[in-house]
Image 1 (cartoon, rainbow, N blue to C red):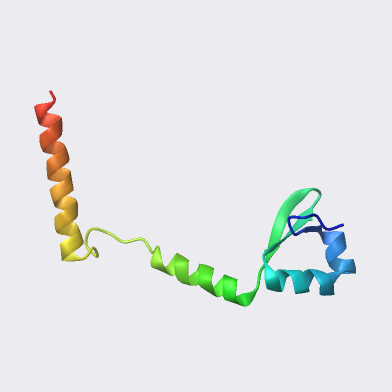
Image 2 (spheres, rainbow, N blue to C red; image 1 turned 135 degrees about the vertical axis):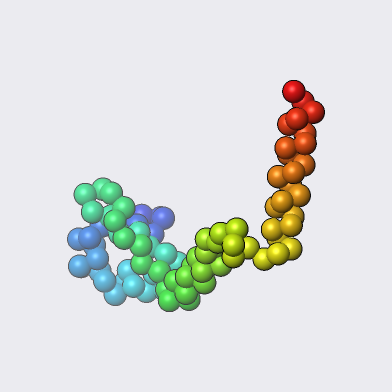
Length: 88
């Protein structure tokens, strides 16, 4: 049975797949199994947006950091070290 939050059981999915898919086109839908969330169905636009956002959060290293950002980082580290020394 559907709840107001767009959550269905795996049994619901097998019985009402058309309705659940139609809802998932409007907003993400959670599929539960044994009362635990197991899956999320979402439309392709939301999926692609999440994938683009995750690509923007790629991990970098000091070696791959742009020079301008590295200089800012270095300045912040130096300022922190200076303030730590004066507080001793």
